[in-house]
Image 1 (cartoon, one colour):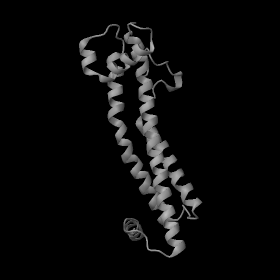
Image 2 (cartoon, rainbow, N blue to C red):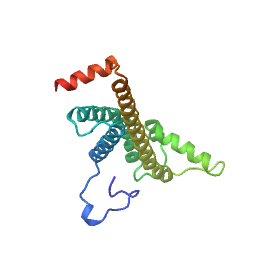
Image 3 (tube, one colour):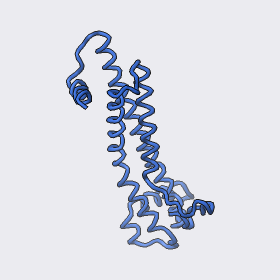
Image 4 (tube, rainbow, N blue to C red):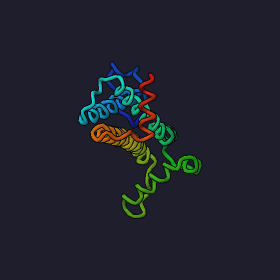
Length: 181
């Protein structure tokens, strides 16, 4: 989308750089690792310990698997954006091929004056916002899931250690797997 009429041109030193999904994955990985590490530290577990690092890596891996959920909606958003690029008029094919375009058109009709026609260009301007909202919502959900999983695991482990109780089967199985590594 770099260089189209909807996106401002980047500075000259960045013109050949293409945005990628991998930057998002690296940032999400660092945040996930940081969240799980901080929660482990709050319960008195050393996140630098190899067994704790294995747990944290498992949580981060789970977060990547959960991010796969946003690929489809983001692909649909990108397809709609490319279909709208440079368009001036509406067509039945455009509306039939892209449900997102129809939904945005209806939303903009409700927000605008009654009976007003919504130009294709206005819908095209709203499509990137939808992509950002989808990405941010999924990222928030994934990071919240990592935090909740780490909290539950560390809390359960702390209470089992404190009161001398056996670990629940699911956590004990995981613990023996990481000990074998």
